[in-house]
Length: 437
Ligand SMILES: [Mn+2]
Image (cartoon, rainbow, N blue to C red; front, side, top):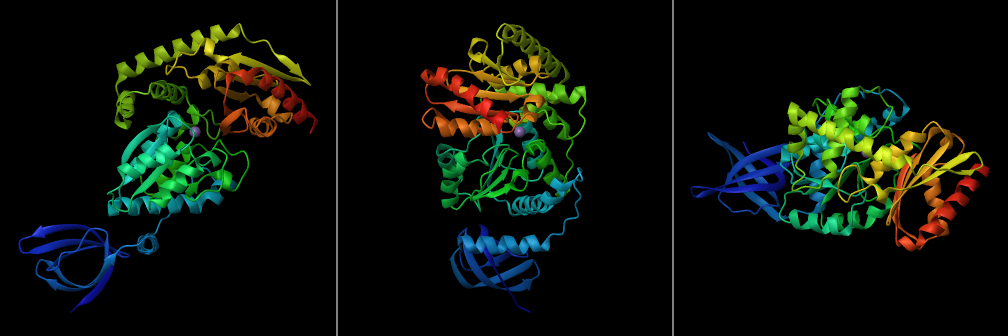
């Protein structure tokens, strides 16, 4: 009895005088022996008949596979998988995100089964690392640490190079890149036929990619960290996810209670991720967490450095008072050492720790960047980092390159340090306006 199947050729091997062809169809994968040679990435229709060893097939039609062929096969496979999943956090946000989580879990499971070639970029902090732990438990790929919030044109070109000969190639970005500034990079990599998946919890711009991000549906939902969301995807895919709280501790999210140990692990990962060393290997991060002596030595060093920085920064903590808000301008360059722990962001956070019970707006200033940390009390009075950034960009369109972030934590790149005095003045104006609104 003959059956017909159609699908994309994933692999061809010589088998004595025949060829052994691995075909991906919308029902799964099938292998058959063929007299005719077909090429990888061709779309073929084949007539199969059973043999004692499996199937032999004769090719009915063949052509190059198109993007639509890939899509329809994926769609077929998605329908064949049943997933029974409940999020850990049962609230409005996760209820809304459930469908996206399941969709990501299915796509990654299918991708893993098909052996799709994936490049996985993770943000350079504890949250990004936890995200990568979770996602690589479903699908293996080349993992790269990404020391920026943006997926740039250069990143896209690198990925196109390294996935050039890949099978159904895909890029997965974790904890960054669902922003307007990443549009160009994403458009370019998509145009090369590469699928893009983003799991992020930073303010969201509609992009030409598969995006799992609560900001698609809600405002101010940064506490659902990328590590948490990635772990939910892993759970939906039937994997265990045991580092959610480290991601929450790393991003200071109050989604769940975290322990001192979670905080320490996050600190160690943040410390390691600051040093952009060769490979930034995901396995190395895992290793450090399991090697007691190395782990505790790093923990001590990280804490020492934070204390040092805090002492240093204390001298600068003199507020500018505006309508009940205390604005602190902190020169982070004075204490930061290039590419060393703590980063400018962490130094600003240390300054924030000193005044977080006040209605404080802390601005870490360096030659090329502004880092925003806002205390609850300031936020309650109507000041938020995103609104500040929006207004600043509007007023001084030439002063800034890019930036964005959450309501209480964000960053902005400055084009030229000469603008800093004017920027400081504008920040004071903007805070005053926001209070009046
Ligand atoms: Mn994050």
